[in-house]
Structures are given as structure tokens and as C-alpha cells.
Amino acid sequence: MGAVVHAVHLSPTHSFSKTTQFSIRVLEGLGVEGDAHMGVTVKHRFHVKRDPTAPNLCQVHLIPDELHDTLQAAGFPVTAGQLGENITTRGMTLADLPVGTRLAIGNDVVLELTAMRNPCVWIERFMPGLLAQVKTTDENGKVIRKAGVMSIVLQGGEVHAGDPIAVTLPPLPHRALKPI
Image 1 (cartoon, rainbow, N blue to C red):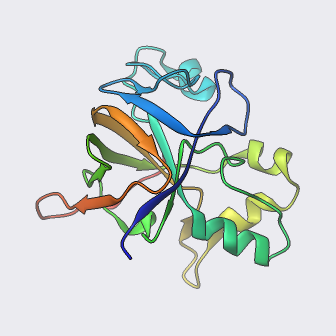
Image 2: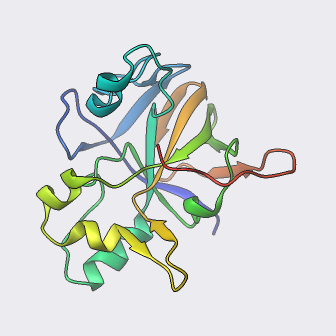
């Protein structure tokens, strides 16, 4: 079985977690219809404070469901949507994909990966100890971020749980996703 959409979520407010939906509609160049982070310019409060005119590279947030499995095994009862993602995937390692990777979802939707999500204090406030689980370091001291990836919408449409995801890598040389 290839990569699929496990679940979809949105929140009309800037709440940390998002509510699971039957489907979401993503709009080209904007993001998830009805979600607080939808728009051409940045909507995350931290980014708005820095430059409210900056382009929104965080239109759709994706997290692999395998992260939830790992967190649950470590004693953190986290489920899909609770970490603020719009799309929970299964069967793909999002963090290993380069900038510019295109994800074709279902029949119509195409997203382009832009950045890693940079886990922040809100994750710790949501569940004490969770930040240390999603932002770790390897044996060389390199920071490893496990809170998903951000993307922009190249082609809109409906996304449902169970939709297949096809991955198209950008031309070489590949650039690693950086935190945003």
C-alpha cells in the first residue's frame, strides 16, 4: 500500500488543535477553506508579528500518523489533528522530502512542500513533555524536528481520508526542508 491521507482537519480559530472533518477543500494559493491559516500572506501569529506582508508558505500543514504512533508508545495520548495539522498522512516519511516536492492527493489536489514545522512552546503547553519528543537532537547535536511539514496549494480540490498521495520530487540538486 502506498501513501494515503489518514485524516483531515481544520479550525476557523487560532486554536492549537484542529477538528477532524469528513473532507476539507483546499483552495489554490490560499490553503484550507475555513481554516484560520488560510490566505496569501502569513497567518501564523508569530510570523504576522515579524512581517504581515510575507507570503504564506504554511497554507497546509501535514503530519505523518506514524508520529502519533511513536508519541503514544512514549506515553503521550496524541491523536490526529491534535498537533494542529490539516492533513494526517500514513505511509510516507514527510521530513525526508526536499523543498519543492509535489504531493498529488486524490484526483485534483497538488501541494508543494515549503518548510519543516518548527515545534514551539505551544506544543509544550498543550501537553507537558511533548516538545522534547518532537524536537530532539541526534548524536552529532543536529536538531531533529518531528512536527510535520508545511506546504502551499498549487491546485485545489477536495481531500478525504483514504485519498492516495503520489510524490513527485523536484529536479536535482535537492534542498532539505528548513524550519519556518
